[in-house]
Image 1 (cartoon, one colour):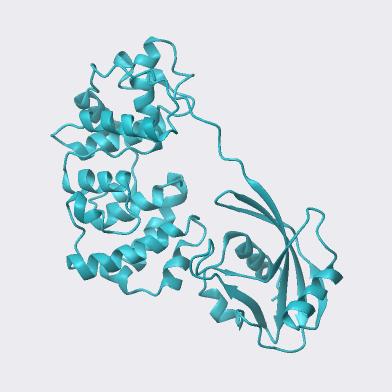
Image 2: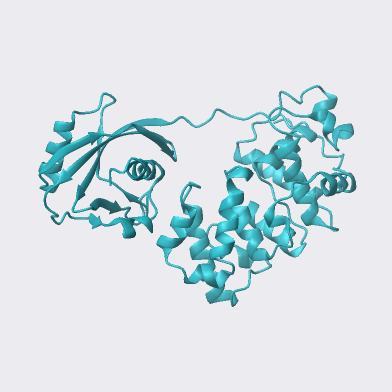
Length: 357
């Protein structure tokens, strides 16, 4: 293992000075409360800033306090999150808010041990809350910060390895200053997000004079990152069934990937798909539903965890509303309030846009 040169330190004064003049105007940076910092940091995980801003603003309008979030029904929480992906984040926020109300009187705790009791909080989020909300000397190492550190210290190991993450987190902790640790962490994150990106803009970097990667002409080779996750392609024939202006939908079971998210009936198929007649046959066989085909709908794609899914939807009409185990027949007003998985939400929007339902 090639260890970095940790004798040098990040110039926190220079970095924070740059940040104060170059930082983006973002809503969670305007007089933030610990609650707002928590919400924004969770939303920003694996999601671009531009995407998060409108979600954050809608969230704070509907759930301005921890109590508001804790008291809300999970369907409403997920509906407001709809489109951000990685829905476990929203579930953890909801459960975390309830923990904060029950155990900490509605106040975000300010110690690592207490924060660890809140569902969904890992080392990065805990460090961000401690430093940004409470000005405590704690590191907040996300992907952007990992990239900055790997270049600044010319770290030549695979940064996706747990051993590398541990080393870089330790380096970050050793560099967080006692004075203004929150600004320091925000500045590192901002630097990685705007300057020290995959294609670095070294001429604009406030740390370029001491960057080991730049000095060794390794700025384009570092960081080293292992192969990306391989995805499995799935194909699903989706039956959109309408009867008496009601849609047949199913709520994701607890513990499943799509927990609490709604979807239309679907069947796993080969890449070539199946005929609309065959799909109607599956509805009859599995649900005892007699249907007639109304229209084939456009294909839609969505992704989750390690899967890429192509949805092949067909619209059917059923003359009777029959009970189907595990499914519900819901009208427009009910459906409008429910969170759908991303691909099935696109199918629903198409139905509404084309006035098919």
